[in-house]
Image (cartoon, rainbow, N blue to C red):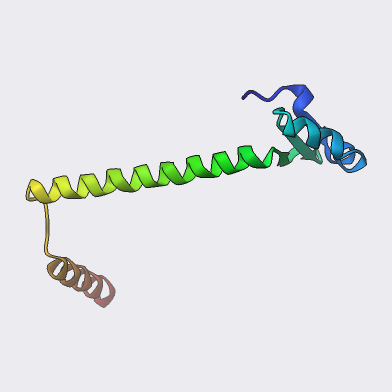
Length: 100
Protein backbone atom coordinates (compact mmCIF):
# COMPACT_ATOMS: atom_id res chain seq x y z
CA UNK A 1 0.00 0.00 0.00
CA UNK A 2 1.46 3.36 -1.02
CA UNK A 3 1.45 6.21 1.47
CA UNK A 4 0.13 9.52 0.13
CA UNK A 5 0.39 13.02 1.56
CA UNK A 6 -3.11 12.60 3.00
CA UNK A 7 -1.88 9.66 5.07
CA UNK A 8 0.60 11.81 6.99
CA UNK A 9 -0.67 13.34 10.22
CA UNK A 10 1.22 15.69 12.52
CA UNK A 11 1.49 14.73 16.17
CA UNK A 12 -0.57 17.80 17.09
CA UNK A 13 -3.36 16.72 14.72
CA UNK A 14 -3.28 13.18 16.10
CA UNK A 15 -3.47 14.45 19.69
CA UNK A 16 -6.33 16.79 18.91
CA UNK A 17 -8.48 14.25 17.09
CA UNK A 18 -7.17 10.69 17.46
CA UNK A 19 -10.48 8.97 16.64
CA UNK A 20 -10.49 10.33 13.08
CA UNK A 21 -7.11 8.91 11.90
CA UNK A 22 -7.75 5.77 13.96
CA UNK A 23 -11.08 5.21 12.21
CA UNK A 24 -9.43 5.81 8.84
CA UNK A 25 -6.72 3.27 9.70
CA UNK A 26 -9.37 0.77 10.76
CA UNK A 27 -11.01 1.30 7.35
CA UNK A 28 -7.72 0.45 5.61
CA UNK A 29 -5.95 3.81 5.24
CA UNK A 30 -2.78 3.53 7.32
CA UNK A 31 -1.51 6.80 8.77
CA UNK A 32 1.96 8.01 9.63
CA UNK A 33 2.26 10.37 12.59
CA UNK A 34 5.10 12.85 12.22
CA UNK A 35 6.90 14.62 15.04
CA UNK A 36 9.20 17.56 14.33
CA UNK A 37 8.87 16.87 10.61
CA UNK A 38 10.04 13.24 10.84
CA UNK A 39 8.18 9.93 10.79
CA UNK A 40 7.34 9.02 14.39
CA UNK A 41 4.76 6.21 14.65
CA UNK A 42 2.20 4.53 12.41
CA UNK A 43 -1.50 4.26 13.07
CA UNK A 44 -2.51 0.87 11.73
CA UNK A 45 -5.41 -1.53 12.12
CA UNK A 46 -4.63 -4.17 14.77
CA UNK A 47 -5.60 -7.05 12.47
CA UNK A 48 -3.25 -5.78 9.77
CA UNK A 49 -0.46 -5.48 12.36
CA UNK A 50 -1.07 -9.09 13.39
CA UNK A 51 -0.89 -10.08 9.71
CA UNK A 52 2.43 -8.24 9.28
CA UNK A 53 3.80 -9.97 12.40
CA UNK A 54 2.75 -13.35 10.99
CA UNK A 55 4.47 -12.57 7.67
CA UNK A 56 7.66 -11.63 9.51
CA UNK A 57 7.62 -14.89 11.50
CA UNK A 58 7.07 -16.87 8.29
CA UNK A 59 9.95 -15.04 6.64
CA UNK A 60 12.23 -15.93 9.57
CA UNK A 61 11.14 -19.57 9.37
CA UNK A 62 11.81 -19.68 5.62
CA UNK A 63 15.26 -18.23 6.20
CA UNK A 64 16.01 -20.84 8.87
CA UNK A 65 14.82 -23.63 6.55
CA UNK A 66 17.08 -22.30 3.78
CA UNK A 67 20.06 -22.20 6.16
CA UNK A 68 19.36 -25.75 7.35
CA UNK A 69 19.06 -26.94 3.74
CA UNK A 70 22.37 -25.29 2.90
CA UNK A 71 24.00 -26.98 5.89
CA UNK A 72 22.62 -30.37 4.88
CA UNK A 73 23.90 -29.83 1.33
CA UNK A 74 27.36 -29.08 2.75
CA UNK A 75 27.25 -32.30 4.77
CA UNK A 76 26.12 -34.31 1.74
CA UNK A 77 28.95 -32.81 -0.36
CA UNK A 78 31.54 -33.52 2.33
CA UNK A 79 32.19 -29.86 3.10
CA UNK A 80 32.33 -30.42 6.85
CA UNK A 81 34.87 -30.09 9.61
CA UNK A 82 34.86 -31.69 13.02
CA UNK A 83 33.72 -29.09 15.55
CA UNK A 84 36.40 -30.08 18.08
CA UNK A 85 39.14 -29.59 15.49
CA UNK A 86 37.70 -26.26 14.38
CA UNK A 87 37.53 -25.00 17.98
CA UNK A 88 41.09 -26.17 18.67
CA UNK A 89 42.34 -24.35 15.58
CA UNK A 90 40.46 -21.20 16.59
CA UNK A 91 41.90 -21.30 20.12
CA UNK A 92 45.41 -21.80 18.75
CA UNK A 93 45.03 -18.83 16.39
CA UNK A 94 43.81 -16.65 19.26
CA UNK A 95 46.75 -17.67 21.47
CA UNK A 96 49.20 -16.92 18.68
CA UNK A 97 47.62 -13.56 17.91
CA UNK A 98 47.67 -12.41 21.53
CA UNK A 99 51.05 -13.96 22.36
CA UNK A 100 53.05 -11.92 19.90
